[in-house]
Image (cartoon, rainbow, N blue to C red; front, top):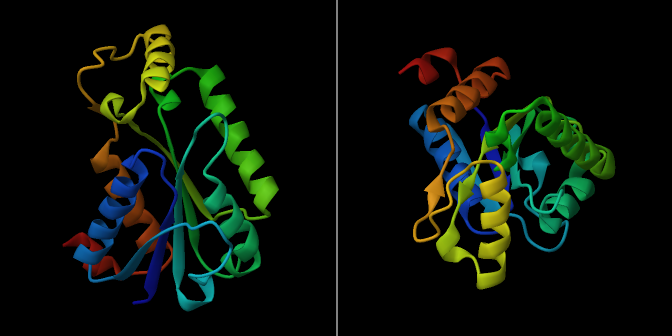
Length: 188
């Protein structure tokens, strides 16, 4: 069994929760997992210290967090030498339209091209709508966007849309197929 790095970027904290849940799933199978928030430089952690790497970031204004982009770009060659996965956290996935799906694919492909990293696996998951963490202006902007998509518009509460079961199944499959953990460990 090898060590696994989960590196993430977050704006309001939901992707940190996604990273923590992925780590819980892997640790329950006996994996040694480090969860690290991407920092402003391309320094450590170093992919060479891990048997597999999962990167998670959320989409904001058509791109991912700058610290994630910098880290991935700095370590793209090392990432290519091991099993990797990219988890894109995004609210737009809730719209379930071909146009939105295509736009999300273009955002991901742009990220891969910009960083020079093409993960062995990728997954798009629905994020959260934390109205309570938004300032007045952002709350108003998000309300307009969400209302247009016929989403939840009660700004007195927060909403979480991530399908945790689906995410756990993705992590299971990645870990088993990439031989990061044994099949028996993930079955329990």
